[in-house]
Length: 402
Image (cartoon, rainbow, N blue to C red; front, side, top):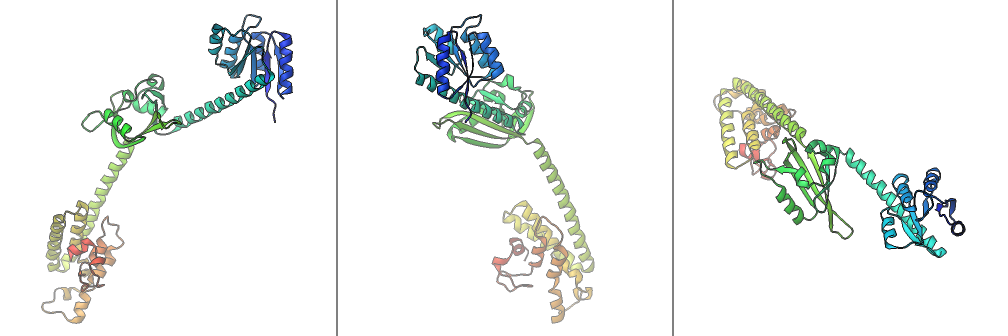
């Protein structure tokens, strides 16, 4: 186990030697004994001890309090004060240096050892906490979303670079301000939502997710954002602050708009393909032409009356336009034959749903056109063709078309 290194700063030689002996007996390494504040700083810089035992009253220009302050601020080494002067004024001045302990002379060896152990432990815990805070701060600064942290009163304690850019508020200016001075959210009518979100955060306890909001920046820019507000809880489960994560969704909305535009163009193109197929069949069979249009119009009307979605209505309409496209494989003399068809001819005509399915199945429609077409001569009681499907196996669109 590595010995902890101790620097003794004590201008009474006899006391210093006694302390040194005690420390060695407890297994510490004493790097040196110095008698002035100036030497304490110099040796602390050179030897980097784990702890400094510092007498408050020292010879030289620097007293123990001033030397301790420098060592704490610049060298980050814990200091424990030794003093025979326990008056209130001295202790108050010493407290300002945030020492890790006091030992009032005279003292017992056990008291010296326990004070040093507690000071080193506390220093290590604080160092680990600082390192963790720095680690978390680095992570928050590198996150691609905007992050704002507040205390329990709603005052801002941290703003990462993305939040600085998004809100227009630099971290230095935002610190201490109320969250909703920086994080200004409005609805689509321009009305503020801060009070609503505060009440919801209190009511919902720990977490709020609000998508598709509008953030007003310091420059009055309006930015679409998704927001998550989370309360932080302390060890007693009391609210100790909040974390606000804000994502700029401008690009996502732009991409979605482009997708919608592309989808609409695709729908139009596919609609053109369907119309072209229908015209091909119509040229071979004038009856089919009028029949397909009538079926399409009627199916659309039924779908609308059933209050189906506009997308389903469009799928039904287009399926109606091409539901007989499979007849393109049937000889025109059969299609236009006057009178009754023979069994052989009728069986050939009954193949047209399957032929239509084969024609359409590899076209990537946003609707189940091929499945609707192959089912359009099925019946809910299973008496239809080509597969004799019953109601539970049929698409709703197919039932409408049939």
